[in-house]
Image (cartoon, rainbow, N blue to C red; front, side):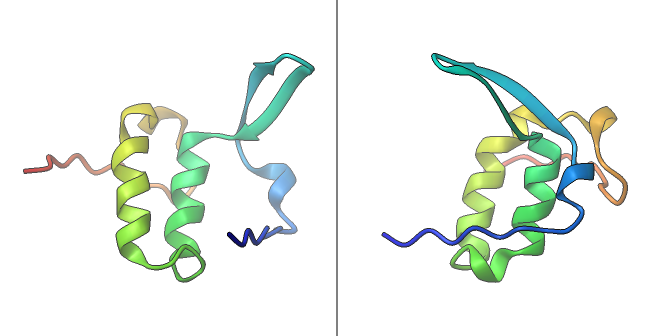
Length: 79
């Protein structure tokens, strides 16, 4: 397995959340910011199919009221 890390100059301005770990707190990207990054870097995520799978699972955690600028909340139902 290969993991590529992508770093943005504006990463410090991205919305984050803190989660508790045994060794302390870990700051991670918010679900809303993660969704935007996935869509923006779909070509680095092995295509839109993989992005759609992750977004479907992430959708329950996305709060439109916490969305970063440029994020538009669209409701959809899987069939």
